[in-house]
Length: 446
Image (cartoon, rainbow, N blue to C red; front, side, top):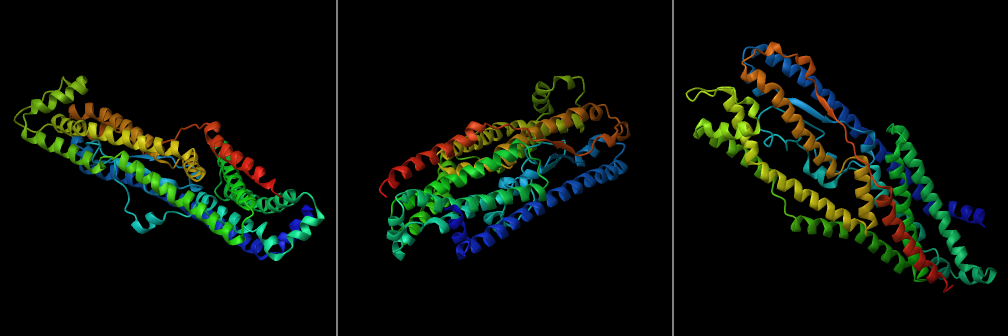
């Protein structure tokens, strides 16, 4: 039976169109991911070379004033890219891969990023995750919406029904032929991505693999459920396309609108303005007002004098740090509300397989918002270590040549996040099983 069904399916136009469409778009998405990785690598190399050249040139001109030298020097922290980022680029096309900061106030530098074409950001990247979530269900719909209705409308169903008592089994086998074809293309594309993008076959890759399989199982069950209603081809097509629009576009947009309005996040600009105001107003205050707060945070520097009648670097960098302290509450509030947005979105996504798949892909690829927030936390620690490492030498008025600048190369931050297999797989699996149970009940009508 299966051999005849496969031969019949391979002779249809929908087979050829689907094969060409999925393979061509899938390969293009993998190549776009490869291009994205190459761009990342070029950016990292350029940043490393720039830091070396910048240190070399500035040391040459400001060797006798370390405080002035470090006013200009930038030190780079790079989020170490993983090749699996290319499968689901997520928010990494908006959030910066690296940050180059001075030892001055951090809040004014934390949200610097590259200029990007807003129209390209709006449309997003055609990565493999996008193809799996949006295109594969459409192909499944196109191949399965008329499994029963076509036979009914062509008048062949009565002939088939008279030749077998297992009518539901026939429909199921016919569906399985199409599903196996789609799954074969999915597996092919994922292993092509592994080879072209040089992905390690680690737990994250297999998690994406299994999430993709479960996601297509969900859509297969949904298509079979619609077929089991025994409606006309036009009804099935319209209903399935409407469900696709609701699940992939409408509900995610509604959830996004809900979390944005429920958890209104203060703009990063607010923190930046507060930091600058907190710094600039110190010029008009007595130096003691600045130093009190600075020395409370870093009492180890209390031994350094702060002359009232002349400029000193300890006072200047104290002002810079007090600017960050002024913006600290706003910055924390913003981080907390972004975390709440993400938590609410993840909880809602447990009931929406399309959203759950998208968020899972981004999380497993390390391109979600949580990964970026963790990078910003690491940037804060990196910035503080830089400041405390240089402050003593600046306040002791040592020359720049006492520092081994070769050790101050661009540093890498590695994303370290685990995941729960249960949380990842269970929601989609439960929904798929529920739909399958309903399908089995409906097919009894045959």
